[in-house]
Length: 467
Length: 99
Image 1 (cartoon, each protein chain N blue to C red):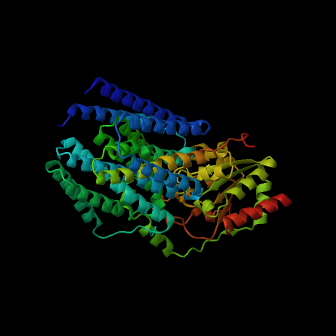
Image 2: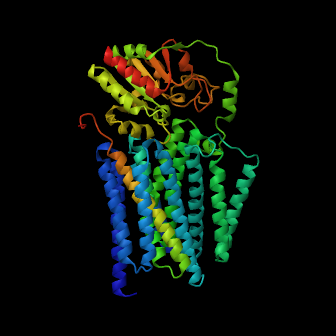
Image 3: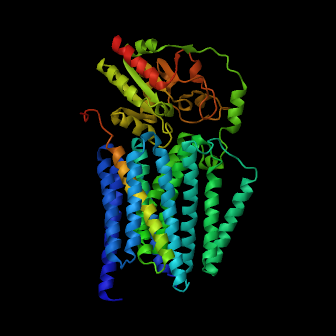
C-alpha cells in the first residue's frame, strides 16, 4: 500500500474517532433539558463528520445511486419529522427503529454480494457477523412494524397467542444457526436469504403476542436492537465509528427497557412471553361492581381547586387521547395566579413510550421543572390538598401496594390516595389496561368527574374564571 | 483470511463503547427519555457510513441497488431523527424562560 493511501486511511480513522467523541459528548448533554438541544446538534455534527470522512477517504463510485438514496431518504425524513403529531411519537420511533434495522441488514446483504462476486473467499468472522447483522436487523424491521401497527390500532392490541408458537420459535432459532453454519462452509446467497426470511418471520412472531400496554417496553427493546444491528454491521465492515455509535444506541435502548420493566414490576422475560392482561382481564370483569362512588360536576371541582393551597395533576395517556394538555396548562396558570402551588406527577409508564407525557406537556408550554417523577413527588401527596387524575388509571391503583392477588401487585404507583382529596377524571367506570378495578375510585376522598377530559377541564377553567 | 487481531480490536471497542453508553445514558433524566429515543434513532442512522461504502464500492447493479436502498433507509433515520428530536427539545422550557 502506498504511503499516500495509508495516510488517507489514518486521516479517515482519526475523523471517525472525532465523530465518536462528538456522539458521546452530545449524549452527555442530554443529561439536562437546558443543554439537550445543543447535545442533539453535536450528535448531528458527529454524523456529518463521519459521512464526510467516509466520502473523502474512500474511492466511491456510482454517485447517481448514492445521491438518489440520500435525496429520497432526506425528503422522507424531513417530511415525517415535520408532520408527526407529538401524540404519535411512539409510532414514529417504532418505524425509525425498523428502518435502522433494515438499513443494517441491507448493508450486510450488499457486502455479501460483493464478496461473492469477488470470488467468495470469506473469512469465518465476516460470515458470522453478516448473519448477525441480517438476523438482528430483520427481527427489528418486522417487529417494529407490528409494534407500529398495534400502536396505530391497525393490528389488534390484545395479545395474540398461537398454541404452538414456542415450537415454531425454537424451529426458527435452529434454522438460523443452521443457515449460519451453512454460510460459513459454503459462502452463497441461499443461506443468507433463508436467514433473512427466518428473521423477518421471527420479528412478527415475537411481537404479535405482546399486549398493547407493553408496547413501550417493546419499542425500547427494538430501539436497542437497531443499534446492535448497526454495531454488527460495523464488525462486518471493520468500521469503528459504526461499532461505537451502534453500541451507544444499543446501551440506551437496554437501559430504557430496564427502566420500563421496573416501573411495571415485570421481568423482560415476562413481557416477551406475552399474554399479559388476558386471564386477569376476564376475572376482573366477571364480577359486577356494586360499591358506591361519589360523582361530582365541573363547578364542584372548580370550587375545590380554587380554594386549595396545593394541587398535583396526574396525567395519563387518556389526557393525550383527549388532547387536553393545553386546557390543563390553562387551568394550571389560573390556579397559579391565585397563588396555588401546581405540580405534575409523571409515572414512568404514563403515555405510550418512555418520557412521552413530558413531551406532550412540554408541547403545551408546561415548564419542565413542574414535571416531577415518581420518587420526587410521592412524598408530596400527603401535603397536597387536591390531586387531579386525568386519564391515568393503573398507575394510581392503591391495590398495587396491598393486594397480593392483583396482577399489578408490586408495581410502583403514585400515592394519589395520600392527598386530602382526589378528583378522578374519566370517561366511565372501565378498568385500566391491566384489566383491574381501581380501588382509588371507592375511597371517601375520591370524587369522580365523568366525561371527556378536554370538555371537563374546559368547563372547570370557565368556572374558576367566574369565581 | 481470518484476522483474529482485528476482531479483538473491534470487540474491545464494542465492549468499551457499551460501558460508556451505559454510564452516559443512565444520567439522562426521565423527562428527556422520548427525545433520547428519537435521538438514538438518528444515531443508529450511522449505518449510513456502511451504506455509502457498499454503494460506492459495488461492482454490479445488485450491489448498487442494495446500497442505494440502505442509504435511503439510513438517511430517513438520520434526517428524520435529528429533526424531530430538535423539534421536541425546542419545546422544553423552564419556569421563567417563557415569553
